[in-house]
Length: 335
Ligand SMILES: [Zn+2]
Image (cartoon, rainbow, N blue to C red; front, side, top):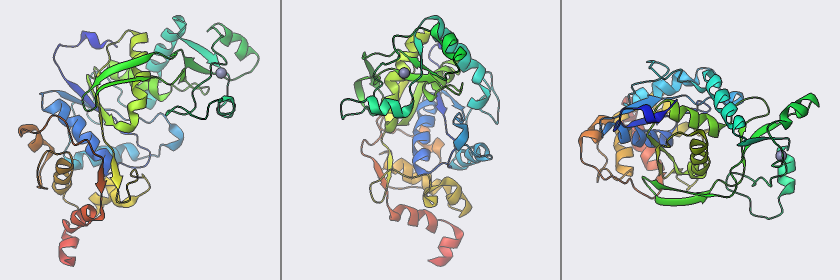
C-alpha cells in the first residue's frame, strides 16, 4: 500500500481506461503521453481497468480496451492480461482495498455519513455558481460523527460517506500546466450509499498500491486533483506527479463523444487503418514532429521531443479521418 517503500527513482505511469463506450482517438493521444512519460525515463507502465461504474460497463469492453491499446503499439509491465505483483488490475475486483481505506478514514473521523440526495443538494444551492465538479456540498450533515452511522442504519436510512475537505486550497506543480492552485470544491463523497467506493477514493488507493509516480490524464480531470491530493494526505501516502494534457475535440470544436463511431479505435482497426499512421498524427498533434510521419510509440521514446506537449486542444478534422481511412487497403483502392 505504501508508495514510499518503492525503489527510489523508478518512474511508474498508468493507463487507466474505463471500458464504458470504447476508446477513441482522444484516449489514444492521452495514453500515448502517459506511456511515453514512463518509457522515456526507463520506467514501468501499469494497465488498470476502471470499471467501478458497473451500470455503464459492458461485457467484453475490457478485452477490447486491451486490444485497442496493443493495436496502437503500447505495452505495459503489469495489467489484467499479463498479471503483476500489485493486482488485481480491474477495479471491480479491488473492493476490499477501498473498504480498508474507507475504514481508515472513518477511524480518523475524516468522513461523515451524509443522507442528502442529489436533488436535495441541488435545491440547497444558494449561489448560482456551482462548482466544476457539480454543486458544492453545503455541509448539512457535516455536524455528524462516524458513530452516527449505526443509528442511521438502524432507522433504515441510506447514507454516503463524505470526506471533510473543507475549503483548503491545494497546489501542485503540474507537468503540463505549471503551478496550479485550487480547492477541492467542498466535502465530497468517497463511499456511495450502495457501498461502492467513489471514483476519487478508488483512484487514490490504486495509484498508491500500484506505486504510480506519474499520472497523465485529460485536463477535464484537473478538478479531481485537489480531491485526490487531500485523500493522499489523509491516508498518509505520497501523491504522484500530475500532468493534465489538453483534450481532443471534433471538427466542430466539441469534446469527442464516445457515441461517435468514426473516431473509435475499434472502428479504425476494423477498417484496416494502419496504426502507425494514427501514431504519426498523434505525435504531430502533440508537437513532437513538424509533419505527420508513420511511426510507432517506441520511435518517440528514442527521439528527442519537447518535454511539454502542445497546449492547444487538437481538433480531429475530417481531413484526419479521411487520411486514416485512405491508409487502408480499401481506401487505397477507392482513391
Ligand atoms: Zn448530507
